[in-house]
Length: 130
Image (cartoon, rainbow, N blue to C red; front, side, top):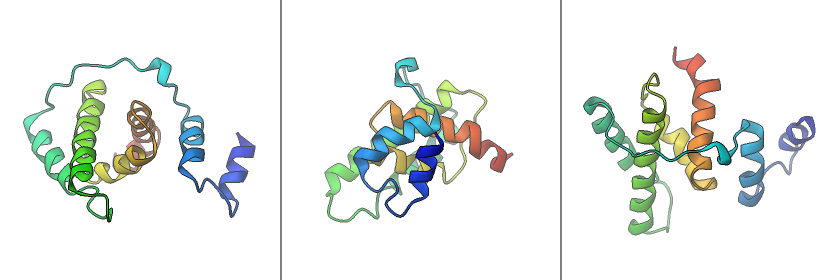
């Protein structure tokens, strides 16, 4: 792990998506074999509306990808956040979580993106948000 940390701090770092796909799960300690899909119901109505609006504001800075792909990612993001909250009933949605999740969704495939956001929330963001 110290070798990964050292490489991450170097000038070449984790600059390619293919490297990030392999390294980020290792750094965050996630294992997609532990993932069990769940049926996504709607979270609390207050959260659902905010999540929908925040998801619609996401991915808008990506130039040249087209409306279809932007809409696809926005729906994926909304589903990811809803599943995150359903899997972790004590978690609350905070505005801006969509921007954290957006980056993982662009780099990692599902379910690793969900597991990465979950790990970041549980181990890093909870201290900042409490």
